[in-house]
Image (tube, rainbow, N blue to C red; front, top):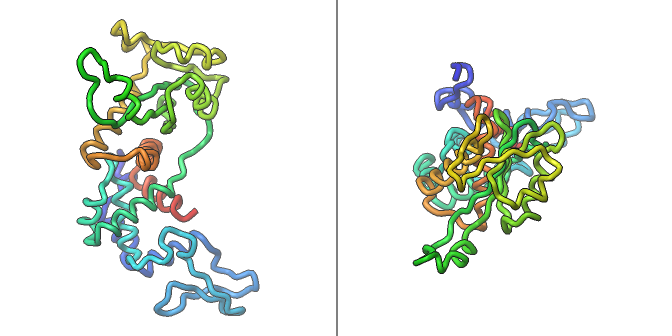
Length: 287
């Protein structure tokens, strides 16, 4: 990574040293300095508001953002955003609590609001696209001769994913891994024209992917790659997500799994530059 693409804590403190600098950035990002009446907005002393010099109309830049009605200083908010953007393996609320020296409740709320504000792109993938499903969570084991396998699998969350090689990824927690569900995910996220769909040998793709140029590898025969036909990229992403959750978060409930997954997807799709990733996250939170 080139030096210009790096962004560290020194850069953050230099760019946003005070709460006033953070508020000024939020104002300039979300509003114009010029009022529709012809006046100019100026900051009101000791307040998070700007007032028009002519009509006296007031604007609160943090209104309708995740910073609204928060007593946490904006410098701590920006520090939390920086930490989140840098933590490709995820960041737990306990770690954020220690980073910011705030309560656990505050740290948990900050992270929840950041994850819920992420907007992953919705355009369809094309080119060489790998697709696969994985299962996450659950308790217990299948027992002798897999007699409890059905119960164990029912407790797990099902995740479908597709990744464009050298491009972006899409991932979604779904109700099951049936052909109809796979077909709906495929239709929503992968272009049919100019796409080579790469999967494993699962027969659930046979009907729903019949309009795609599909190639597959047979994992049951220990075939994991045949030339450039493989699903190693998407499987590597699954491995990263599972290791990160078990190592950083320890456990995630089905209720919040999609928001955590959105965080990993967002990091993957913005993986090339630390500086651009931090900026992209700031702008996403101010939409």
